[in-house]
Length: 93
Image (cartoon, rainbow, N blue to C red; front, side, top):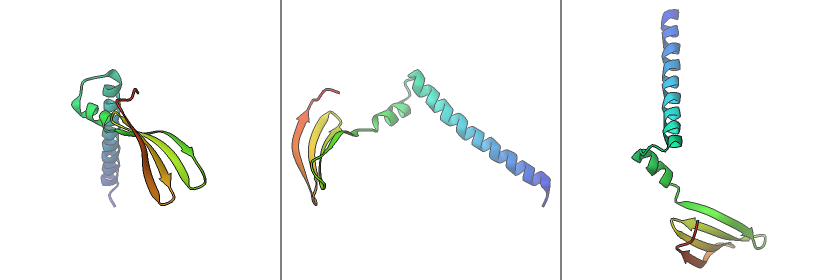
């Protein structure tokens, strides 16, 4: 095998990996500086669902407080069934 072609392939691979790292660094830099990029804003808003707190009731059931957008839900999860106990709208973050 020709070592010049192998060397050229390795250099091309290093160049492409460097470009990937440069793009990720640039996206992180733009996000930290607060630039108004719609793509970065959409990525930041995509995390709509979060679990706020979780408590064990017994070995099989659990109470879960979850938030989606601006609403909070209290769920009883376990024993083959899930029950919505309470919904709160307009909660403070």
